[in-house]
Image (cartoon, rainbow, N blue to C red):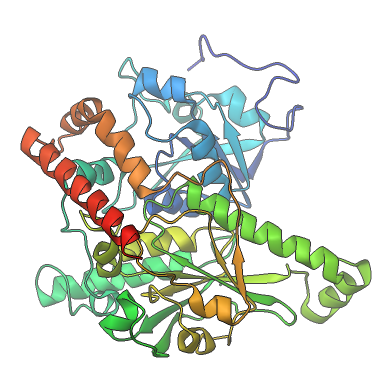
Length: 456
């Protein structure tokens, strides 16, 4: 099949380098899409694609082409590129990739195969978006990640549901909590456990990567600051621990709808530690040579651990039906992020002195926090890090207001369009009563936030 009316950029006009065509290789894989919301389903597709080769190039459609073929995006192109750039299995992001996958585009960037999930994607005329690469025998299919999609997340927002909440992740993974028979719960727990292990791989998708831990403490210690307890840690996935000389960095949060706001914060934490590394001589040639000789390769100056709060903890503070993603989904989002080296599931809302001292690798060298808080707080959760002299703040940035609340508001403002998309996909659309309920709950949550701030 011959492509027709395909716009092929000229030299100097390609959206990202290289500008000269690259020799096509079967080790270089192409995947493309909208990547609206950086949920773990998108990361799962990239992980599977990365395992098929040695490099993964990710084409990202423009806002305009998505509007023409599918409808408006929730996230801007800049925000979507930020999310793809942060995925540890992505080698290069290519924005403005054509909605109908183009052989000249993938060949220019040296990719032989195009990978997509086992669902059908059509353009505005109803034709298969992958018809040209399929005809050329350059198309590979991977399994679609079950239980998560942009459509599903939008539905949770519009319908204000809470059925996605997980009361106890460890019990769910063990098959003790959840839906269905004992056998079904066991299978679900095993599948979820395997997915955590898959997402804890390194940039190849095949070798060990991130450490994964779970923390257990009292409900009071998880939700508030009234209980000072160390709790206990259990290792879920071995992974790779910190190397000699690395600074241990701790960050925490809900990481709901893992957005460009979270990603930019994490990226800036890495950059701050790099700057400290330059000052300390970490990047001196002699130091790098010594590390390489001793450990078989070089590594950065910081090891970043991310604590992820439970669903009930976030809902305690934010209300409505937050978090939109449950702890399993949010933890997978954190694991796929290249700026994170270790994840702690069910981390307490307040990192107390006892908790920090009991972290698997000891008291961290620094605890970082972002420029804004999504939670309506009545106290400073970071009192202990401040007293220990390890508290660090990341300043303002372009994505600082992009959080779960902002994303929900974008959906609500254009709900008619998104409801129509839900219907087209056979999903239940939100009725007027459901929308009014969400608006009222959001209003009540805003009032509670104001009251808490007054009483601080």
